[in-house]
Length: 524
Picture 1: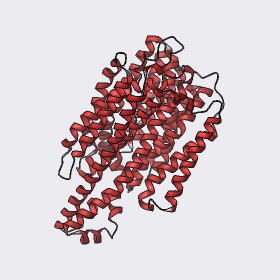
Picture 2: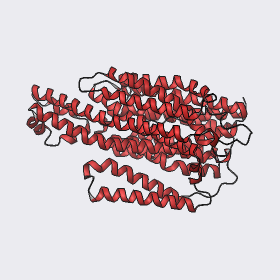
Picture 3: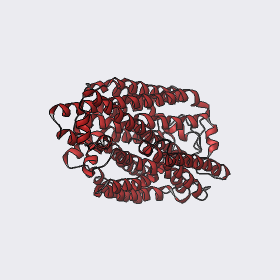
């Protein structure tokens, strides 16, 4: 077998592992919460610790890979990801898990930033399109089976094993990459932009930290205001630093091409809407409706399987219709699906979500295939590592800020909604006494069942019903916010992604030819 096909196999194995790990975590979160006695904020950090480090290091990883070698950085990322996966499984506290998840995100950044670049370097002409098609099928399969596999593992042998399974797969991927994948780099690459890394990652961390802690500390408190101001100052500093660099890790000149800007807006909007909502969908299906992890994984299949099934058709359409049509229509369907889910109320069953699951699944399937080419199709192949890193960064920033921002709204509204419903029930005093006056803490910790079990029959029923009312009210509020973000992304995709912005590759083929190139779908 030719070396290029071994490259495709190695990269596909690694990314399958990475994406499978991201999607299986969603259905394991309630079990993690109970096992580690973690709060709602801890659950946010299980996802955000990963997304933050992934977003923070993607740009640097792309630049380092262009300079030191994409295979070298890819293998390093595999090793870090595999080792930190083992640490995740061994975690005995929420803090240990979140620190390990942050380390896992660092390894994931190295893999994400180099995966598409390794394939683009190894393949030319028609074979490149074939390779990206295979890669897209692999990534789609990982996303499709992730919730089900996560449910099987969590229900069968425990949440720890969703991380332990990465260890043998990661070791095999490292061995294959070292033996069969050819090294590649950008001969014109310069040093690492450390100042850019510090300002960008610092700004992102402070923003997410402020969003997560805002409800507890108060949005007008000195601490939260200071965090938000510091985040704004650092992002301004990042822009200034990058503009002063001869070879910045984020080349703002690329954003002068509307198609590149549009592709990154689409990546942010997709992740900040439907993928950020997966955390809250999981909590609703398991904590409110009472389904097990496996049962929850099965109920996500309409979205995941449809996105997998639609993607190949979307890939074929990219050579017949403008990319903007696929991106804009896909995000519009995501928005429609999220709005459909707002039909949920305290008496709803899971089937109320099905129309929304169907629409969002089709929408994600339409967006993913053309998104990567819209991101890297406006730069020469030698800069594909940087372009891929920027687009993946947009995705992870969308997830991190989406989960934190939606969580700030959700956390406040679920507490106020539950408290208001309890007040109308006439059992508020007994419930608050059982919760020692800390109802919000009980709601955040997911221990509503423990408190309810110590109450009289009437108070028990009142607390459960009030929680369902408060949860579904807050849930529909953030669905509207997420749907609006997707709708804005759709409008900007139609406006900005223009075919004339794509450039020819060094091999003479137009950028529109490989537009079925997939971008790995991010999820929690």
